[in-house]
Amino acid sequence: MSQCYEKVCDLAHLTAFADEIKSKLGDSGVLLLRGNLASGKTAFVKAFAKILGIEEAISSPTFSILHEYDEKLFHYDIYQCGSNGFLQSGLIEKLDAEGYHLIEWGDAEFEKLLHHFGVDYSTIDIETMDLKRNYKVHINAYA
Image (cartoon, rainbow, N blue to C red; front, side, top):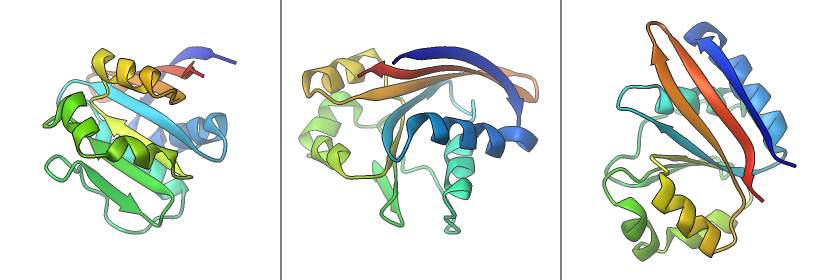
């Protein structure tokens, strides 16, 4: 069942928000994170990793496309490669792996790719507001 809502949050409350999202996704899921440069996409991934108990330092996989953490968190950044590069790299098959797949820069073209392959996903659009962020959440955007 699809669920849409907005939440305004600062860094101090980001871990609690990430935990809320995790509970809505269940045991695994694909989550597209969208927003301008420096909007907080990677900060959200860091908070999500924290609630999963991952102690490894989290960094954006801008040039490597994918960083894996403890075989339960898969952090993608498709800014450089786009949908075609993602598809050509064979990473679409990685989305079948059990765990959480958090994908930065998953635009409308990328959503079409996920639709084509029948991949269920949720989205979070992030807007900056001084020291806070407005998160527009769409759980089960395509399921």
